[in-house]
Image (tube, rainbow, N blue to C red):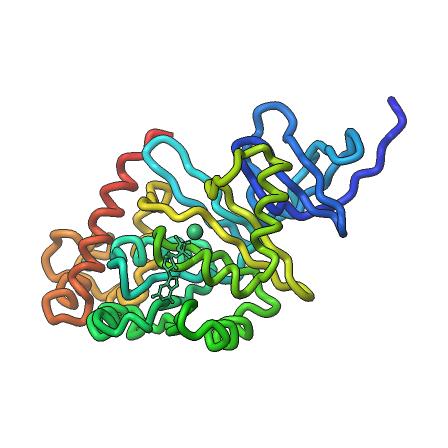
Length: 300
Ligand SMILES: Nc1nc2c(ncn2[C@@H]2O[C@H](COP(=O)(O)OP(=O)(O)O)[C@@H](O)[C@H]2O)c(=O)[nH]1
Ligand SMILES: [Mg+2]
Ligand SMILES: [Zn+2]
């Protein structure tokens, strides 16, 4: 046996393809996995074996408390590990997608991560009332909603969000244009510098925002910025996981005529009755139907 080199632990702070950047104390290391392994996520606590001054190999991944991912028909894609919270950033304009919000909520429920909604650009008063109405659906389900304006009231935005972020590991997700970068820059003043540093280390090209990165701020607080995306596939969730991920279904579960009810077309289905009576929003049930369909399409 060759002389054993010491493993040391680090946090994965960025991922770009199969290249990772990990932070151990003040040191940032470019990392690769052994072989073709690609199951490392930003937020993972890993054990590294150093190969040169700034480079290391990821030898193992510590057990995760949570894992958030999305998936399509062919494969699943890890979004981040060890999260405690998910912030869904939406805005008064451009119009946000209910489909994307609910998909993110379902993913968070399935992963056991608390979800918050951040409504940005409340200075755009023309569309504020309509936006609040649309967001109320989620507030009624018990998801906290925080109204901010990164541009018109930056100090208020920081004062609103920072106390909720403190001590937590939070991922921000949202469609592009909602103001996610604006908020990140308020909360993490050096974010721009960090992004340039990470881009250089991972060789991602100049202005790319296509990688997920983690910022560690004061004691135990981390914030993860993910690229804006238009799709949030959840093909990996089973039907049983899905019915539990829609909070408002809970009072209905076990109340259907058939114990193995799919809540799609069955007679005397408590979920369908609740949609009929207006207790469950039709667009939420329509998404449930779509996700059950997606989960039956997986090819892996
Ligand atoms: N009116 C208004 N515009 C904002 C606000 N926050 C961000 N923006 C603008 O919205 C656009 C998108 O912001 P950005 O932070 O790049 O969004 P991202 O794509 O989600 O990262 C930019 O032109 C910002 O200046 C806000 O609170 N109010
Ligand atoms: Mg951005
Ligand atoms: Zn049912």
